[in-house]
Image (cartoon, rainbow, N blue to C red; front, top):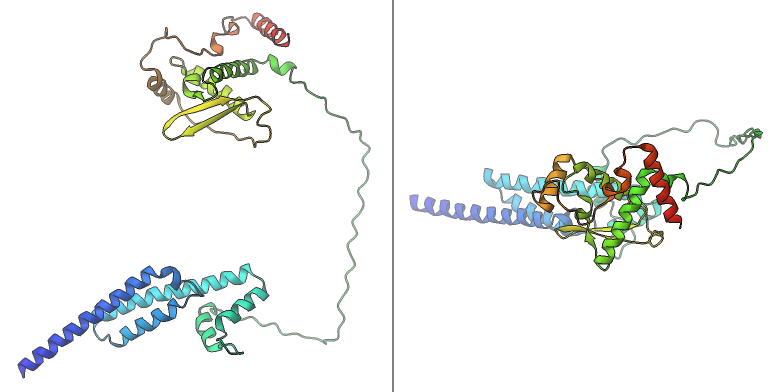
Length: 319
């Protein structure tokens, strides 16, 4: 008798293990087929429900029932996603599209009727509220009230005179500003480097980063932003290498969209960047491509003398 009980117990253990393995396989397939189970048009969901129900009918212990609960939870989430997709479909499409979709999903093949039982079961999650009903009152033959179109009062004409704005020449007073002088100087240096590199791109950082004066580096970066805004230079960076630049003629890139770049950097970072580029240097270091700080206008501290220097530069450029 005891031997028979032992054999029955071992058989029960084997059946439970096999059942748990089936349930684990179902959970694994649910995870792998998640995309198909969330799709309203897929038939994977019905097949998976059938597999889970078959395993659930054989479950009568806590461990197996726990696996069954996990599977049902995952399938309920997939069913919820199907309901949300149907709700989203109703918002994105017109009624004709939605009606055709409904017929395609819930009209069995070779029949002329819709399977309302299946439709109700699958769309039941959407019906989580009471439908509002408005009762019509009054006679149906009542004519629609015609509203008079609104007539707006005409605007009174203003007694004003339109004046054409005064045209400002690029060769005017703006060229006298120190900023424009620096930008033109920087553009000349970029053109020179462009010739030296045969248009293959010059090292942008060694042009703009001053090895000694961080204030000079800030001014160089500020002036270079004007060249980028006016599409007079093209900058390329990436691949872990230093950024390269190529100068262009002002009209070559007129059809391209203007782009503005924002640079955030502090003085400490500029000093460290200069150290990486040039190493530890002193004030007597020779800069390969000196920019506007070496210009005559910076050697003078008198405003009148600086104005005369700028005026001479303006006349030289015109000639």
